[in-house]
Amino acid sequence: MQRTPLYDRHEASGARIVDFAGWAMPIQYPSGINQEHLAVRQEVGLFDVSHMGQLRVTGPQVVEFLRWSTLNDAGRLKHGRGQYSMLPNDRGGLVDDLYVYRDAELDYLIVANAGNVEVVASHLRELAELFDVELADESERWALLAVQGPGAALAVERVSDSDLASVRKNQTLDASIGACPVRLARTGYTGEDGFEVFVAPEDAGAVWDLLIEAGAAPCGLGARDTLRLEAGFPLYGHELGPDTNPLATPFAWVVKDKPFYGREAMWGVDPGRRLVGMKLTGRGVARQGYEVVDERGGPLGEVTSGTLSPLTREAIAMAWVRTSHAEPGTALSVLIRGQAHPATVVVPPFYSS
Amino acid sequence: MQTPDTLRYMSSHEWTSAPEDGIVTVGISDFAQDQLGDVVFVELPEVGRKVSAGDAIAVVESVKTASDIYAPLAGEVVAVNEALEDAPEAINEAPYEGGWLFKLRVDEPAAWEELLDAAGYEAVAEAD
Image 1 (spheres, rainbow over the protein chains, first blue to last red):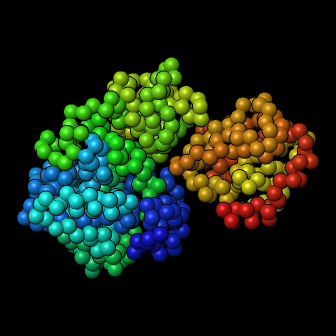
Image 2: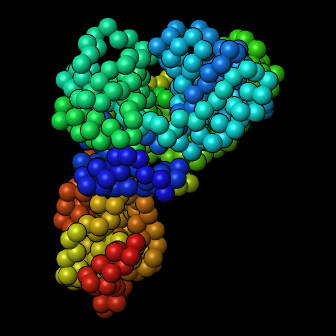
Image 3: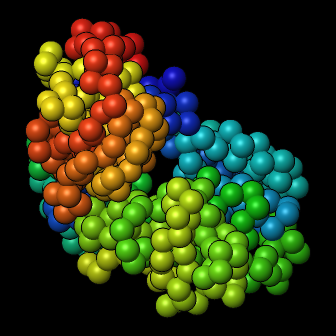
């Protein structure tokens, strides 16, 4: 398993380490997932997301290339800003979901999921043959930390040289934390305000320690998953995959009406199902893979993620269901160990901030 | 990790108290609750249900996963810990006391002796 530059710190603080996409990552610290989750919703938490991959894309045709190869419109990004985006395949589904940052006119940085970096890179390299662009895998150059929660800006300000009040969502900023140069991006995947901190691997430990001293609670991938689910954000491999049409999801806004790779297999093609949020109305927890059925037991689809919301204590889930049962308020059922448990279609997020 | 030596265990991490008037109490071990993490939901068997040793009769769910709980011995469910419905975290806080799951009237009390003792269970848990 690969280790991030923060591995020793995770181990020393008693984190439970698991194999995540080939990386030895902390799933939780001794405080437990629920407390970590609440720390991010109410105060501030700190995540090591150094397992994610970075690809630098540059060159005279980088804008045309990214407008063709990704679903959001990277050409509309101002310098020093980022956007959530997706990488389409040629059969109406996705290779990955991404964050795309524009560092300069012809200089972009893409952040991809850990398990997908090589697939994303080879897919982009193939498409890049028709464009005058350069791709460079910068995954080794960056450690990535996420400081998330209503207290995130205050915590970062305590240890950096920057006034963050004017930094807008999705904006990036070069700064220092302690003596370490960092790239801050006001982004994250928890539903809270916060920053992602790009830092050289050799500086990651010092930056981590300073942010912990500034009051951030260390959080593992377990809380990261419950937070993103509660916020209604998709995770590749769960809600999204090679056969999921993003136009049938709440994230259809990502797909801009322009020419893009694989458009004819996606645009205007109705898969007959929708990605929805659900709340269970009784007791029980829906989990990935559980079947969703109608009142007569007829199959409607499958749960993609589910947990008990640490904040609201309700059983929440996302699922692909037939379009006929996708309207908010629709009653349906989840089969939990063979028993039908009633649920209602709701629009995420699953909590009000 | 606490593994009281007054109890017997299964390799699937359930503990079982010594039979008193033919009745045993069953829960999950300290090791198991620690591995699971925050317990958020418990599904308990019906009182009166007849069970065989090894039947999956309860479910303990943590934030991340659902785990089956097996009957350690054959018998009948005579009580369940209803307090867990509102406070499943008792399993994390006191796995051998407030976090008990169910009580069985066992068919053969002597079979309890054949379950793993504390040392045997610790060896299994460490290898896990």
